[in-house]
Image (cartoon, rainbow over the protein chains, first blue to last red):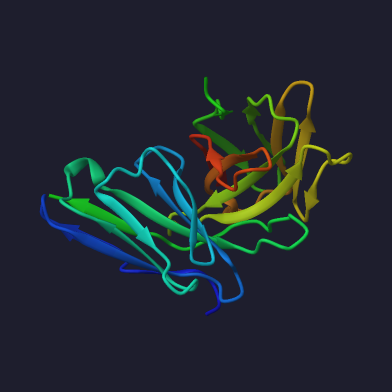
Length: 117
Length: 115
C-alpha cells in the first residue's frame, strides 16, 4: 500500500494521559500535514512540515500539542494531558512541493480517532 | 466571516442523475486554489478536483466538474451520472495565497444517492 498510513486507527484514553499518533506519508512526498476533524465539521489545519522543518502552526495547536518529523519521513503528533475536548479525528496528509513553487494536491490517511474519557 | 461556505448540509440524488454541490468562498488574495474532497464513512479524504484562481477553464476530472464563477466567488462541484458509491460527505476547501499551504475546509455536504 503506497498511500498515507496512520497508526493507531482508534485510541481511547483517560483524561490527563498523554497520547502519540504516527503518520507515514507517501514515500516521495516532502510535505506533511496534520488536521483535526470534530463531528459534523470539516477538517481544521493544525500544522505542516516540509521535510524536517515545521513551516506553519495553527493557533489551535496549544502548548499541549507537539508535532515532529525528525528525519523528514514519518511524523508524530503528541497530545499531553489530554482533555475531553481533544476527542476528534486526527488526519494526516502529504503532498509534493515541486521546485517550481507548485504543490500537488494533498493525499490523506484514514485518520486516528481519539476518544478521551 | 466564513472562508468557505457550504450551505447544503444534505443532498439526495437518484442514481444516474447529475447533482450540484454548492461552495462559496471568501478571500481578498488574488492567488488561491479551490479543492473538493470526498469523505466516505471510512474516514479517508479523497481528492476529487482542483481549480486555480488563474485557471481560465473550469476543471474537469471524469464525472466531476467544477463550475467556477470567480466574480460570484463560487466553486460548485457537479457530479454527473451519480452512482451509489458516490454517497459520502463532500468538502470544499481553499488554499489561500502563496505563502501558506494549509487548506481551509467548509462544513461539508452529505450526499446520498438512491436507486
